[in-house]
Image 1: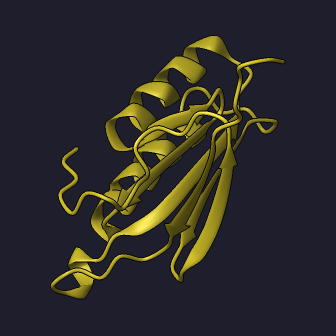
Image 2: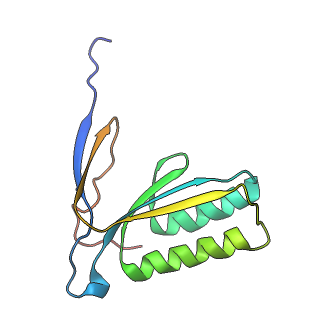
Length: 119
């Protein structure tokens, strides 16, 4: 390929200390595998309120503990409710210590660069 350059971004992720423990923010990754189209759309609606989509079934966010609980509770209600399917899978990873991620390809605004995140 001529004229193309691979974009590489290194992000420092993990816990961002707030004024109190309740104000701390954590880097959160949500990954899922959902078969039912309606359940998929409902899950997408929940995740878009809290996080940014980085791949088709992967979202990331910097969230306060209260927001993580709200999101988890909403996902649990969806997963256990009317649309229950034992084969469906949603994973929420909260990174509480510092870690580093290297992204090859397009990376939007790196999380954690802005002190104010409004959802």
